[in-house]
Length: 215
Image (cartoon, rainbow, N blue to C red; front, side, top):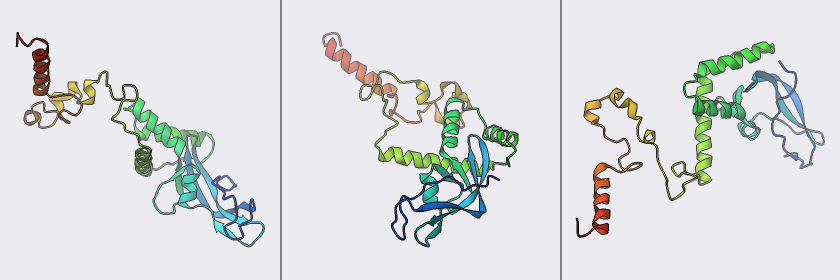
């Protein structure tokens, strides 16, 4: 175990006496587990102690940990946290290499920890659940910032093109359950690609306007 307090956010002033830059870390006996891109680490729990007054408080709170870049494994005060950069790495791998398994990824982290002589075990269920909670939180932040993932950042209001895979994987039609009942029905009718009858109607309106005598 690393005999030092876990690096977290340190308040600027003492909440009790208000003295600025008077708080210091002191180690506690309990242990906090942190999982990062460099594997698993075990740190001492921390106490905030004021050098001016008698103020002393546990520094490992959910708010402090999140502000410091660590995501809790449980909603309550726990002993395991995952770094944000670890989740960002896993999110990028899931996007660019969809076939990558969680088990293989965590096994790689465990091997890194073993090579450094540290405890290695990382709970796959806890990691997966925490990652999805973190991802949901990131989505809420993006929504509050006004990000809309259905708007192409390049085309903006004038969409130039769209890939059919955005509607449905064409090469998987025959593998979809209830294939006969679906009858090639669109998953999102007219949201991404107009239905055939709308396209024909629009085409006819253009032809009528361009060649009224012929139509």
